[in-house]
Amino acid sequence: QSVLTQPPAASGTPGQRVTISCSGSTFNIGSNHVYWYRLLPGTAPKLLIYTNNQRPSGVPDRFSDSKSGTSASLAISGLRSEDEAVYYCAAWDDSLSVWMFGGGTKLTVL
Amino acid sequence: EVQVLESGGGLVQPGGSLRLSCTVSGSTYSDYAVTWVRQAPGKGLEWISGIAGRGGSTYYAETVKGRFTISGDKSKNTVYLQMSGLRAQDTAVYYCARGNSWEPYGTFAVWGHGTMVTVSS
Image (cartoon, rainbow over all chains, first blue to last red; front, side, top):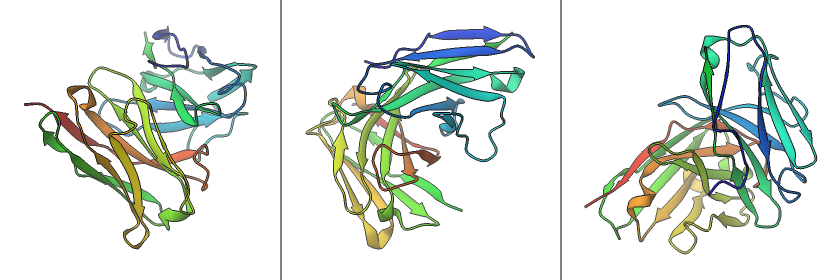
């Protein structure tokens, strides 16, 4: 059972801006960095961004994040067909000393 | 360049055991945390275990606690996930990742491509 809550699906047209939300608790999102991963079939999870727009090298600035209290969101601007994937949020939970993942949001580019 | 490679997956009967390996190249793994995440067929990502760097603590998800054991071999730059009492629900692709620090709650940017574990009779 996923402790972080994400919408199961999101969609947008090329060029649009879409956001994906992630909701947790004071022990995870409220206390720690929130990480966003992209998963494509048959490939390794890719870290996209984490708290306050920290991106690994190579990740374009079309990806941005925000956090407020116990909720976080990932925004993708200038949507492209290659952005179609499943996106996961994750955060460390201080009370349980475990990583929490969201259930994943499947993004469809219409 | 740091790379992570998982191995050891395969087909195992329910109740059986399997040991997965996560070999880190391009750095001394023991300075960094390592974590295991799995994805069952048609399901999302699930974190299952982690080990802090510097010979630190180990952590487990409730779903595997008591059945899985994570450990490291510094001489081989390898982290192991010993899995026992395997169940059909453990069938998944298992991914390993190396953190950017010794802390278990740090940033995991380097991931392997996964190894498939199938639990079936």
